[in-house]
Image (cartoon, rainbow, N blue to C red; front, top):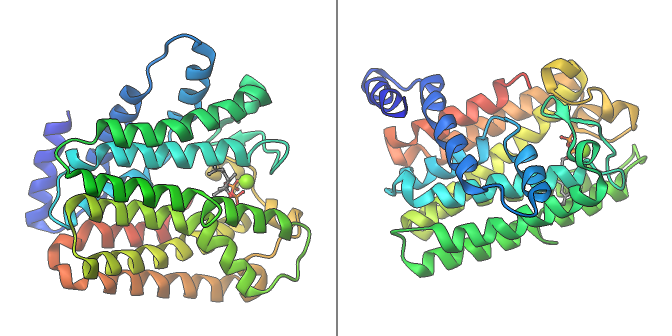
Length: 309
Ligand code: FPP
Ligand code: MG
């Protein structure tokens, strides 16, 4: 099935790039690798809880960005697959913890009950911890055909993206800002560049590092990722207002209800959409020097602004 898709991807590449075909090949590849990455052994309930959230669907945008940037810089899918899976493990654990009663207290994620609703808070906390630790082990133990110094750089990059300088820091400022509708655009930007942007940047830059990209190329990839990270968040804020719970697979209208400062609450819906489109255009322009090889990442940037959930 995957090879039939691969053939169609090659045909599409000649005829013009088609993202739906590309995603139809990449998503099952990532899905299968994630499924293989965590088998159920004793004590079963923790592995089942980790798998429940890791395999709950989702667009797999982060792993796909990592694979695409590795290929863009001349590497292969095989070189980046363990890191791609690790990035999805980190993303999943951050959502499990984000949904806990101590944080956002949410009941639904990706159209299913949240982890703590099914397994209890104690196991949900441990499932997040288990996924986080395993993500690093997975990169270190499973990356093949890549010089060790590049793997080490990727591990350091992931640590930084996840910790207080990245996701954790962004989440802290986000929690601090709850109930304050008057936070500044600088604070809002700090939250998003850390809570969402840092991991998206790590996805793209890690792919480049694994492939041996030059520092100049890595800088372009990093700027591409920062721009799509911000655009992604603006769209998220817009969808919270305009999409239904069914479309989102989680509660809609939460930001308004919590009187949260968001891009649309500061700029309005129209200006927010315009800013998102502009960020995507800047992101795509960063990769212009790579020529046709940049098509997947450029199309992914468009996909992010056109998404409906
Ligand atoms: C969703 O934001 C949450 C995140 C993107 C990350 C939250 C980060 C943490 C909980 C820190 C996790 C701990 C480690 C060690 C990484 P949201 O609530 O705005 O979006 P939502 O509507 O999808 O919940
Ligand atoms: Mg949340």
